[in-house]
Image (cartoon, rainbow, N blue to C red):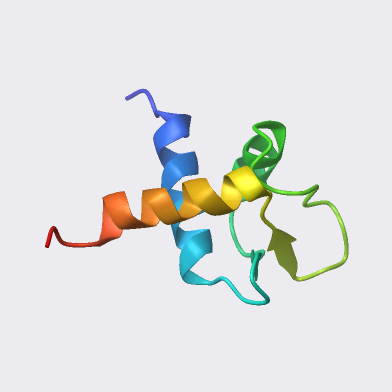
Length: 76
């Protein structure tokens, strides 16, 4: 089975939207490989620090809401 890491990244980004606080911070409780990829894609600030939260970039904040709505909401 081949894993589509882009789909995993989208799902994690959507879950980051679910845990947002302080406007653009989300809890740093996901697999480090995923957060590294999200950082490389420019969607979050560097996750390697002592903080318990990640900071989403402007693009990451927009994309996380889009992915949350696409993956976890019902059509109206």
